[in-house]
Image 1 (cartoon, rainbow, N blue to C red):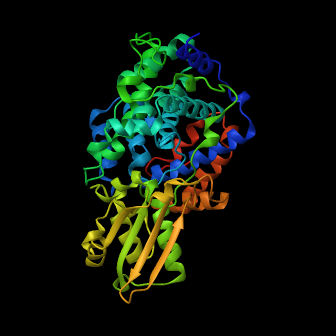
Image 2: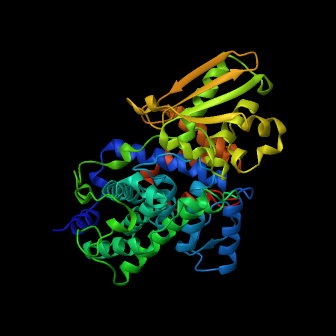
Image 3: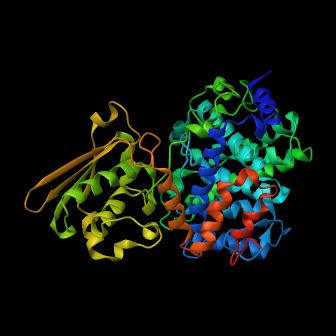
Length: 455
């Protein structure tokens, strides 16, 4: 059996009953965290999701799936496009893996398809666990972050395969259909990071995530009805996927420890700030300093943000979510980061604009030595020449420096209550806690529509 066939056979035989309890628990945490991010981005303040929702309303479609925060339903493909874009619009979702914002793609995809198929909570959990397995394995086979060198966003390209796998589980695809669904997902795969980094609107950044969720679902639906496609996309040969997206090729990763290594348990953790994860260590370092040495922005002469070589791109991005000087300036001026900081242009505040010009990214090669996930250091130089420096190897919330269970729930409540009452947010939280007991997971999207209730 080739790699594609082995993965397809694994997917076709995947069952909730095989999942260890810790996988079920983690899947529910990932769903809760991602739902918080999606609810935040369902606000009309987020232009990308507002406009896509408006487009979905105009297009119509079979009213089978909920668009979060709206008062109408549409077909699965368009619902996944809008909800998937919500998954990343706020840039505060966690549970990434293999250089991907996996939760932002996979949770919307499996929720949409579970609603369409009227699947139970156990099927939804299993679909998400399988989707993580597939998206992570394909990511490792292609070298994960190696896709950046070609200008691709790994989250979008690789998310297509995970979304197809999760949707395929809920459609009950057989082995042959799974192979085709994965091949068709490869046909759809796209997402150009170099373009959206230059888009100050922050619209095209999450759009590529919505495309992955939507196109993954489309791929599974096409395979279900017998649409032909590449049958062996991960097997080495003249027609494999590797040279298209990456300079790396590790096909054995597709089937490594298949069936015993549940990748959802290896995700990178959860976010505390609404911005690129590569900036979180710098923000933690900044706030650690300010907690011990309360400084006003006017007292700061300069901030040096020390990063690894890979972090230098955070100095030039037009998207606020990926611009370190902007995020650190907002944090230093306001003493905190709030989700709206990437939607509302804080450079209208002259203190933020002025401080941005005095924040400099510099490479510190010592940060590449030893453990760390986007390790960074921040040095504040005051106008009276005092210096304060802090280094952070793992941001708070990373798997190696985890948030407590209560913190994950507190984050969900904070995000959800930006668009709904505390009572309804608590209903959603409690429903996710008992997700495996639900015979029909449609009771969850019923709480996510505008004015929704459990009735």
